[in-house]
Length: 151
Image (cartoon, rainbow, N blue to C red; front, top):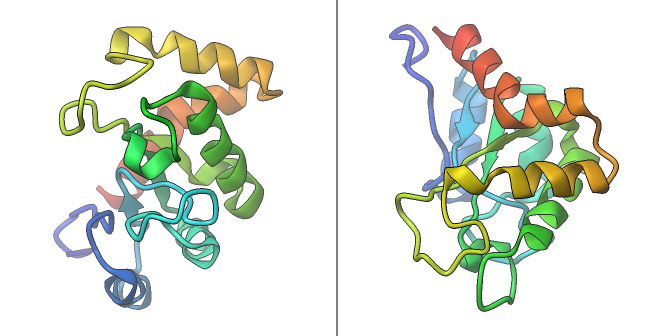
């Protein structure tokens, strides 16, 4: 896949599949919509080791806004998204975080209903201590870097 310029996505792989990709890919790979298992124990979320491996490969994890992967809330909340972002940054660094909302594939029980409300997350990130450069990386620059590195 590397030779074909394909971006490998591990979001729906089990743990063994993730590590198979990490051993065999020479290019960055992504978890397009996955969160931190240490914050919310969903098996689709990434372990701390996976987050480190992803970062060491130059890859990204797109934060999934689905409530089932964020926590115990009845709706998907910005505060829960921030918890996952902070954890992933702490474990793998700012360059590992991207947005993978999955707006088109999840129930509509969301505090942010669609892309037009992403300002809510940006405001919360600023209030949480992230600066403009870090927020730009998370919002698009990290994903753009991976696209350029793979293609």
